Image (cartoon, rainbow, N blue to C red; front, side):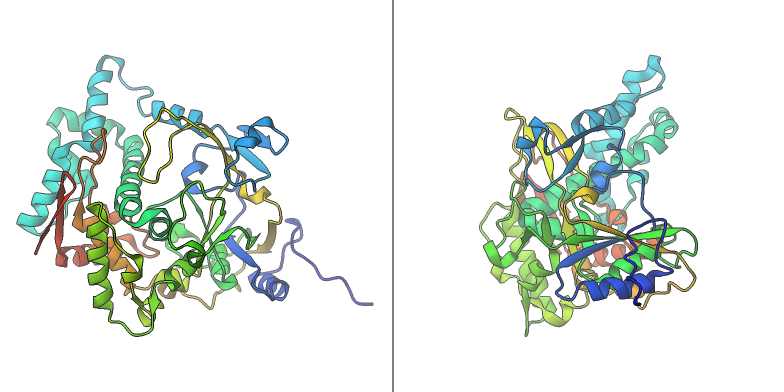
Length: 448
């Protein structure tokens, strides 16, 4: 009598290793009807994009489809939501100044605001690059603009403040460096894959790629496979997928699609016979026009096929899962770059509870070596990396809104995939060879 095949969906009875699980999943997915996410373990928290993870847990209020608030769901696809993110985030912002010296609280707040977005930061960074061919770090720049007393106060709270400052810089770069000129779809695709967007959850169409992320920990830069514990692969139905061919690049925040196929977006730009330098020139012209508020045709961006195949986007077969939200917009709030408003409340979908999602478990083992290597998944000569460095290091944007945001040179925030020191050196070398583009009141000036 033939024994029934194990499905590995019970955490108490996982696959013996990743290879046993892959054989099973490959047999199941003959028609490429799923996408996957690999993790080294299952966390005791809702599965959602990293932007929300820090502020939402299972302890927060849960909402399902039976709740009256479900009528405010954006995509009508979620089953379980947690929040309220708006209230939690406000509490988090208030914690920036928790337990500070009450007698100096006003002074400490001033130091924090100065370290966050003083115009002197940008001036020092620009002048250092132009005069000395050097790109100062965020921390060095902060120190350079603070008095001795202010630096002492900053040092007391540095470990608490720097993660907040880093997230602020990511958000500003994402909004004004990617979304403003490239639109939500292309901007999301680039920013997410290179470390500047956390509004989506990374996944892949390739099981081998998912297996790599399920067996290698980012804490040691994916150098070795884990040998203890239980890993997990999530399987999601390939549904509500946005295709660039369906409507050009007109996707926006409020669109009903819950999955963005990054490969599909870039394959729409791939061209059989073109020089990569032509693509860089076309991208620079396209980007500059968009930053000036002029029309520019996406069709001008012809990415050579062989160059595209050297990118992490192609090799990681990347997709973005967009969590559904239950939110009611504040109609009095200012429209953002992507045309949405601030929410009055915001409950985020637990993607692990979405209909059709399955979880598969396996034992970590020394036998879990992958056929993929991190050097393949994060290629050093990735041509799109040059575009990311150009956007971040060559664009200095000021006074975008009433808040007077600034884009800092934050090459250190690009997702590396390998040793950050080595990677940062590569990015700095690229940046120092590129044009400087300065924008004052949204007027572009190109300098060699």
